[in-house]
Image 1 (tube, rainbow, N blue to C red):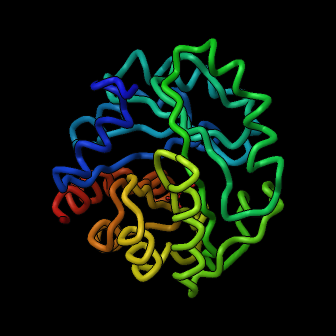
Image 2: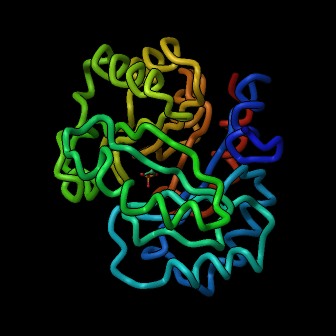
Length: 250
Ligand code: 1GP
């Protein structure tokens, strides 16, 4: 059963009503804990819908303190976007339970999930099964190296579409097209459009989105949730214009 206030339900409702969502990605390795309250406040003022928290590889053990700082300073929903089962933390509201469906690494398709499932069942986290598709962003990313998988070719929308369809038919509740953090090239409008027209579950898109124009185009092409991390880490002033661009698209 889907809880009416669940994060998944909020995303589905926004999609149904034609409202696009904007998520700020916070990589605990890349922010100082002291800067989080101000960042959260800025996010609230800018109209950010969700804070995604996580990273493909965390080398500092700060996820838990990052979440507690955020929880103390904002009511924005905190969604874990985990690079590994080590990134499960009850302080968040929800967790994207990712299966790397663009790859053929059984560990990331189902292995790690089997390890995490009993812990997640005992947690209070809302668990959202999400088909994660890595798309070639023009340079090797941490996620392609860490996952030991080949990304989907950037110029083959049909492969992305077929992969997404399979994910939806397998019952995954959301799809995530990601060019990887800091990607040279974000996922193309052609790929976003092909995937979003072929499927009906919410589509999250991120990786290498650096400008409000690009965020607008990606949302217009069919993304339901736009995720930006790197660009805002570099220039927090982009937060408001990014959020406005996403919310202004249709
Ligand atoms: C990465 O989609 C996210 O997994 C966000 O990417 O940091 O490049 O915005 P950026």
